[in-house]
Image 1 (tube, rainbow, N blue to C red):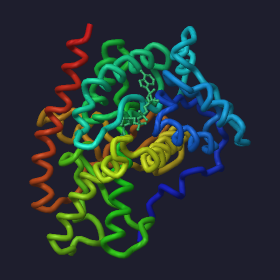
Image 2 (tube, rainbow, N blue to C red):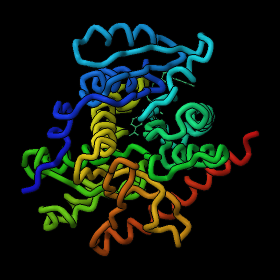
Image 3 (cartoon, rainbow, N blue to C red):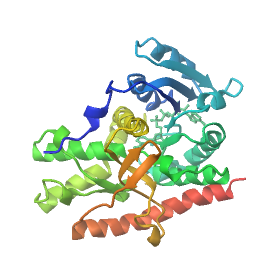
Length: 336
Ligand code: NAI
């Protein structure tokens, strides 16, 4: 049985540390544990943390961990804090923004997070136009198109290096299917495609070893994967959304990007990127398995064979995605 590559790749010490990684929103619920995990990643030589609050404190705290990387904290209170944090970075992770409260959808976050992401993307365009940009801030289906448009405006958009982080959906799928089947989640790989919110999240159960799962069990499982985030939002009861599982997911994704940059072979992970798969239907961004290399995306894999049920889910997903993407574009077009 195929083993998922998550735990295997993470924290691998085989390569020389060489990359500058910047976390924007580094003091938040995701930002802090994500920064900790990046401090443990041996491919990172310099970790820069930026936030509107506490980034220097978090950086000083992490700097006492004896891994071979430097940690620097930057704030918006200092002159050029954001520019310094981004200067010539190789990878930029963006978990800045507000998280959901009970009853909110990811789309409800748009009004606040769209502006935050637009402004941070502008700074990325000016200070590290060649960086691989990993967008965590929700709604990812719209924030990624926002970053693309901003970079385009500055003439520095490279679609091979802009990613929406959907890894949390993939790890949830591994976990939840293993709970249903009584298997070890590290052996479960589910190809989750589409976008990152509710019905746009499509776990292709027909491609797993469990395609004979009874329909009612499968429907429940798919719903749980699509709305798994709500479980956390509800349990945290107003204090936010997934942070620890998300920081794990974010660090797994970042490690794949770094492995690609470092020239490792067969670095494959699902992510929301500008994609040719459904472009002729007006959908510019789509999440599917992608091979990563020294120049970012080197191959976008088709989603593979799907069942009739999954085909129907895909049709619904595309309708929503199209609107989410257009909303992101419009936001930037309407911004001065
Ligand atoms: P949080 O509120 O705990 O942290 C956000 C941090 O961003 C705060 O420290 C805040 O000061 C900072 N921030 C706000 N505006 C900023 C700016 N302009 N520049 C720099 N930093 C800024 O929120 P949390 O829980 O860390 O979530 C962050 C984002 O990640 C939310 O949008 C949330 O919806 C999203 N998220 C995405 C997931 C995914 O799978 N892609 C999963 C879970 C959450």
